[in-house]
Length: 344
Ligand SMILES: Cc1ncc(COP(=O)(O)O)c(C=O)c1O
Image 1: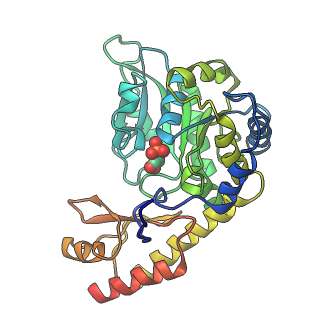
Image 2 (image 1 turned 135 degrees about the horizontal axis):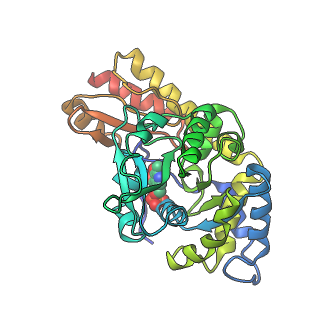
């Protein structure tokens, strides 16, 4: 194997490696044989753990990635003529290469939001022509926790959305690619802003918080239980050697690894946010979890990007995204701040 150059940056929590405890968990289940496709002892352990976290009606279905989790979950929530309401900035709309449309056959009614968050009022703006065959009928609302702009819904805000959905014949899906960062930031258990708030189905993220490649669809509404196993297979998201995906998820949710990793990433983002504000940098959205969205001039961004990799989020405004991961260190943050001090 060629020698790798080791570097660190702020591009994405997906750029980070696998947490050693997750790697060890995969190694620990490597010996011998187990039944394939999910009928193994590790997946059984995961089912029980997810029920502990999300309540006794929860059923979990490991999948390879977050896009797959979303496409499987949203198909379960819609009939052939129905559509999804989501924020314009939602990953399903902006960053999944059209997978929900192409693979799930889903129409997305996407709406602008000030901060990546939907509200009952914003959702209501899409609730017209109900009963008209000319318009794809809203069947499910999809929210992202934390949002693609680094903001956070409170449990009460999600409950208000769920109540609106259920009184308008809509289901509620939560894209939880960063659900651990959200739970850690709110300092509540997962179920407080999912099961207890009325969410019907969750895409549970693990990769960004230290897994190698493992996410899960967690079905909270028993009426959706039956279809998921079939949809996961037909959507090419049924792993044959499932025990290795389940082992990653078990390692994160069995104890407090999910929380330790998330708290750390969030704390690094808070440090970065404070340091940048001290330098007088404008940060329009509040930093509520592990991402910071400051505004730099194009020249400042170009100079900083010579040292650290990160994404420009909005070319027009100069807003960039600085993402902290479970392995971001104080030295990483202080290094970026020192570089910014020299450039600004
Ligand atoms: C909000 C959100 N949802 C879903 C995903 C899933 O992505 P992937 O299919 O790359 O695992 C991501 C990844 O960046 C994300 O940020």
